[in-house]
Every structure is written in C-alpha cells, then in structure tokens.
Image 1 (tube, rainbow, N blue to C red):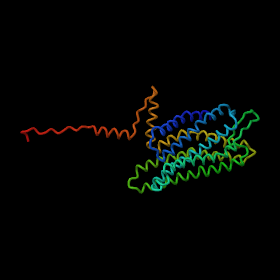
Image 2 (cartoon, one colour):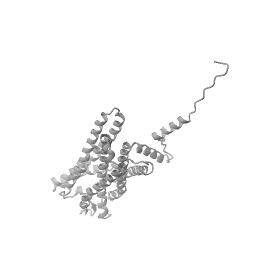
Image 3 (cartoon, rainbow, N blue to C red):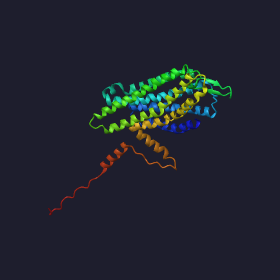
Image 4 (cartoon, rainbow, N blue to C red):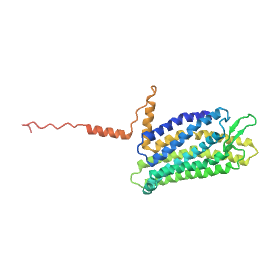
Length: 329
C-alpha cells in the first residue's frame, strides 16, 4: 500500500497542480463545466495533500503516532473525497444532459452563479455524509505487538453501526448517481440522433459518457461491492475472524485501486472540456520542454492555428495584372 500511495502521489499531484494552474491562469471565461471541473481538481488536490500521512502510517507498519484528531481527519477526508468525485462526475453528466435535451431550462437553472451554489451544496452534502466516519474512527492498541492502529470503520469488530451506514452510502451516494449518469447519457444520445447533423456532438457526448461509465464501472463499483462484503462478513460471522481475511484483502486492494481516481480525473477533465484540453496539453508540453533530455513536440491549440491562418491569408499579396502594351490587342 505505501508503494501504491506513493505512486499515486507522484503521478497525481503534478497533474492536478497543472490543472489548477490552467484553471486560474489560462481559462479566462469560465462556463458551468469549468466550475464543476475546477471543484473536481480541488477535491483531488486536497486528498493528495493528506496522502503522505497514510504513507507514513503504512511505512511504520500500521503504527499511528499522530493522535486521534489527525487519524479521524485522514479517514474522514478519504471518505469525503471519494464521494465528492462521484458527485461532481454526476453533475457534469447532468449538465450535458440539460444543455442538450433542455437547452432553455439549462440557461435558466444552470447559470454560473447557481453552479457555484451547487458546488457549495455538493461539498456540504459530502461533508455531512462523512460525519459518521469521524464518530466510528478509533485508535486501538494491538495486544500482541503493542501497536497503535488507526482503525477504519469498515474493519471494526462490531459491525452493528457500520453496516447500515455503508449500505446507505452505497445506495444514495453511488447507486443513484450511477442511474442518473446512465439516464442522462441515453436521453442525450437519443436527442442528438433526431437532429440533422448529430455526428460531431454525438462523438463528444459519447466520450464524456464513456469516461463517466468507466470511472463508475472500474473504480467505484468494485470498491462498494468489496466494502459491503467486508462489513457483511462481520455481521454473518461475528465470532470467526478468519473468515474476514479474504474480504478485507479485496477491500484493501480496492482502496489502492481507487486511489488512482485522483490521477484519472485530470484525464476526465481533458475529455470533457475542449478548451481545457488544449491549454492543459500546451502547459504540460511547456513544463516538460524545460527538461534538457526530454523533447516534447509543441502543441498548438486550434484557435491559435486558425488565427495564424487568418493572418497569413490577410498578408498574402496577389500580383497585379500587367496592363496591355499600347499597340497590341
């Protein structure tokens, strides 16, 4: 786990810092999608800045030396970040659905100011959803090794409170967003097929829908299944800790896999926002072009190429026609 968390930190932190730099310095006009993608990058960065505490915890052989408040904050932050990612990906899918299927209602309901209020509400809901994690997080001392362990609520011996909470989060914060993403995607594709020239917008929408479904299918779904399985085994076999080992192992592996969400979300932003993708590519190439051993081809945005073509077209001088010489027809 420390090796995977360290790889996530090394890969994800530069990607998200570049994303935040692009949002602040390169994108002058923020749309609704820009606001949502910015909050997604902000949640990723906040989680990555807390990841060194978990790396230190696992390098110390699961011996927590930083006290209960910080243990509670780290466990709560992971849970909070995970559902923030789900909520913002769902909001982006719903935003595309409103823009395609209900364009007039989208202009009224989804202004930039209301989108900011929506983001504040998403942060508040995710925070409220993570409060029970703080109440169930404990620091326990192992009798055999005398280690101080920062326990996760999923792995508590008494699953009387963790099982209803895990099931509630799975239904309200995962299953309902998944159904929303599927519904919005199918309705948007059906609407575009009825239009005269749907091919370009269909390709863009399919990329966004496919990326959202891949995130849900490969990262979020296995995590929730393994988490609930680990809790259920404690409910079904409370006196047989040996039967908990396999579900716990699968759940721990899924925690490692889901940590790569912070590395995948910048790529999801590139798929969703065309202008962000162009500026991100340009900034990424400029950063790596400073390295003497790495040669990166310059990436020029579409708008820059169009401006260059107009300038070149305007500066082209056509040769004047020669006047006929007197005396010749």
